[in-house]
Image (cartoon, helix red, strand yellow):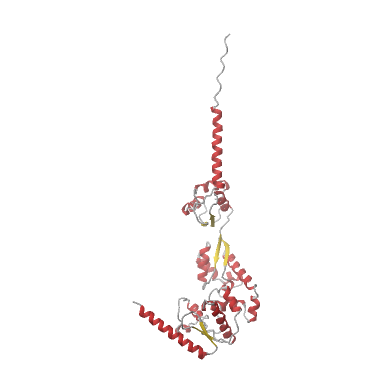
Length: 359
């Protein structure tokens, strides 16, 4: 009896193929997840870089182009892949974002989805005009300086912080202020105003101002003049005492920095007689008392110097003829006039020498 022929064993290749494909897929998925979640996506050495998404460019192609042109990411295309499942493109918030060194694509996508804008620092030192302040603000925030200027020039806008266009700077204490990049003008000024309020409520400043019969605004205005007179703190104390004495005696302040402000020319190095006829209310040679507003944002230290000004009998001061930057103080006009002539003579000699040295 013949044996039946046994069927040949089926090939296992077909069974192995799906397993191989699955393994490859798992590896690829793991690789992609690794790149999305665990690997640094940045391509720069700095601590961080800023990138700005403009208001009218929040579409996927526009955002990816911004990242590509900035050279921030190693593989910009991964941003498009990772952003699709989270649908970040339809709700993209315009503004300035901070990309930190070592961030993963997933971290960046999540930041964009949540609209987590960067913090910006508004550093205010000495500012003399609203135009300077507008330029400073527009550099840090996504707004045009002309629009900022329009806001700063509106009493209706400034009424929110209890100020006006003349006394605006009295609400600003030079310091560093942190904001989000999309902060509105109201938010910016409110924070500055709160900082000013906190400043005056510390270290008995309100009590010290009352003790010299001045409001915080008046102290601020006087400090702005003192701050423009000299950089030497030792002289600032005496200059503050001179001006306080002049105010008490109802004498004109005759402060040269106010003439520069009145003429809107801060390059002036010498005050001539012709300048003193300027009809501006900031001309303290013609108008008695303090000017209507500050002529700069004085340093906090200078404000404290005015509050702590010593009691003296000084009425006059003039720059020393050695050009050291220090001043000579006196309580009578004769002595002051003698020192002023001495300084004027030395200055004329210096100017003649400079002219002679020119080719």
